[in-house]
Image (tube, rainbow, N blue to C red; front, side, top):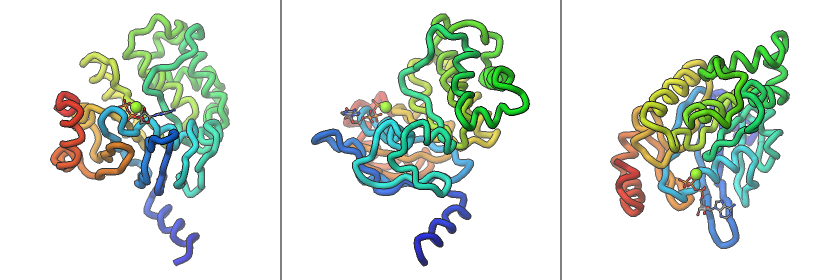
Length: 259
Ligand SMILES: Nc1ncnc2c1ncn2[C@@H]1O[C@H](COP(=O)(O)OP(=O)(O)OP(=O)(O)O)[C@@H](O)[C@H]1O
Ligand SMILES: [Mg+2]
């Protein structure tokens, strides 16, 4: 089978993201080491690993914030390896950041409107206009009542929702959420969980990181585990939680991350 035929078969299988032998070196440190996996359209997948495992670097490589040392990334049948972030957004991948980032002094509506100015955002808002489209996104993430206020006054749970709203403004097909639960209270986590589940039910493919497996356990049907930049396994949360290498990786770092 030639290369084009193989790609064709993968697309028919519904593979939306194909990561092959991805490696990222920072000087002498290999943060991501020969890492390969696939995500199918409509998947809802967690990426777990203890602190420093390489999760954020994987997201940075997929979203173009870092360039790989070697390896390839294909999205929706197109090679996106090493493309700049705005080009990757235009292909249909959006992400949130582990540390929340917003335009502090713009209103929530304007924060979301900025990402609606992306090519896909503009296409999606055709007919209704950017403001109405941004407003519908704020409604979807539960922040429409706060559309006119700036993010500086928001509690952390709302800031996390705003990050998701800003990502949705680019009308993505694949959403990467980097540690979305980080710093949230139990109630805020529950609230955000409902939102993420709803987005997935509405058809988004979601790939999210977490270093506390418990947070992802009841949420995602499939988990990819990594440690020291390397792929460990891919399976149900239960299978991953029972894997000896995963257990050792976590217990070595302190079992409270795992519990
Ligand atoms: N820009 C960089 N320059 C040098 N080293 C880096 C850089 N970014 C990440 N690293 C290193 O790469 C390794 C993987 O980091 P990364 O942030 O991807 O891990 P992580 O799994 O997201 O961790 P956490 O759970 O703490 O978010 C770490 O050793 C980190 O210090
Ligand atoms: Mg990280």
